[in-house]
Length: 102
Image (tube, rainbow, N blue to C red):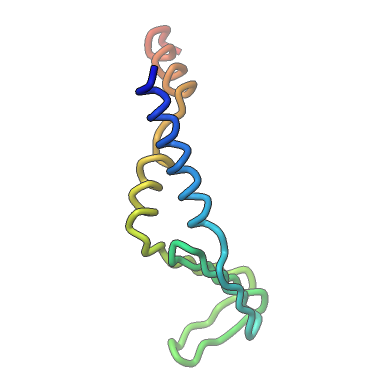
């Protein structure tokens, strides 16, 4: 029974780490754009009005979103392990569907 407790505690620690990494650490607003930077190093910029960026020669429209990937390697590892897994119910449903042909 101890092994299941250890697995559960490990999963809870990973979930807590993921939740902490997804918290915002910085909020910046300028020129119709709001940028949110997260603990994991990624960011999300949302444009709320049309904007032309002279530095990159890019035109943005209201509603455009720019996502930058996280840079925290541990977050990326945990995210790939836990967020891409199929829930148990979906696995059972898939198996039953193959058996019954539905």
